[in-house]
Image (tube, rainbow, N blue to C red; front, side, top):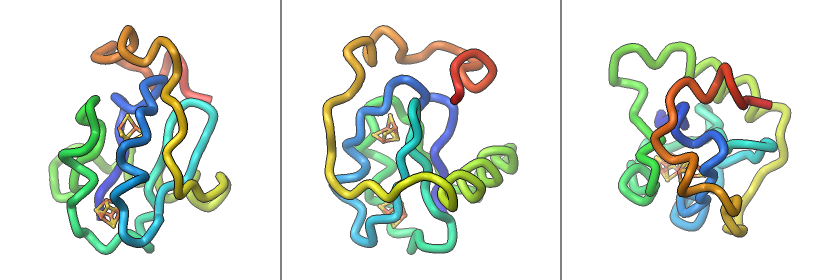
Length: 104
Ligand code: SF4
Ligand code: F3S
């Protein structure tokens, strides 16, 4: 599966949603997550994200993110259409440790 990671938080560009063939993105207040049991590993979302927030879970160190994607995709609503990104998305791009600072 692919997973959404820290860089998405408060950037939430949502370009990923447009390209996913199985509509497996779920929307929280500040970020999106992927449902790992629905993702078919096609990889098309990864290069679409301007914040480079989407990574394959075969990369090391992503266990925490895989858990977070699994947990919240079961709670948050499905999102299939792109909406506007937050007004300060570009300013938030590249900030570190967004999970601790802004996740909700
Ligand atoms: Fe959707 Fe493919 Fe991205 Fe998985 S890898 S979330 S199926 S676009
Ligand atoms: Fe987030 Fe990137 Fe999608 S910022 S909403 S993973 S396009």
